Picture 1 (cartoon, rainbow, N blue to C red):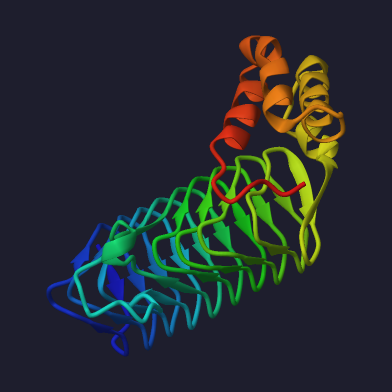
Picture 2 (tube, rainbow, N blue to C red; picture 1 turned 180 degrees about the vertical axis):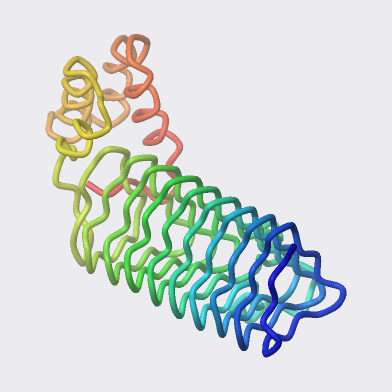
Length: 258
């Protein structure tokens, strides 16, 4: 049974799962779907065509599912889809997509979006990421899974942040951030593999060494980038992580942060 505070405003057309809790002064619009055991603590606004998965918790003064902040947007029907078990903290904004960007903004499962963060229109975010306080994602940003974006960092539109990337605080990212690499600064630079993070996640010594070799070959050798990528094919056939690393580099349209 859902628990709705009498001071909340919930449209009769909204779809509520089992065990939903909606605190005082929340506003839930008619096109909203809340999954089982979602919790809106207080003063949360959820609007537009927004779907939120089970067991997601949203803190006060978050604005979820608002119109995209894009001058080309003319009121078209677009969506925000949020997965399960996310924690969305105070004063966060997550906007719906735009027609020219695919129409959907997505946040996967198990993410922690800290206070005052902004997820712009058409962003595609995977699972188990951490967006620290004040993170600002422009439109069309892609983030994989298990990445960390440090406090007060900004990510330029259309940039990609790879799986397991580590972005330090106050970083301004204008190109793609590499997997397993520490990226810091304004403007951003890469500072090698996040060895501590690799060890914490249980990667073998052999895998870590292979990734070290890949990073060094790509960015510290005298080979041209295409030559370095070709030179790593044997290692990529042995280690899936190296394959992902070089495929990410090959797939970059904005270039990767070095």
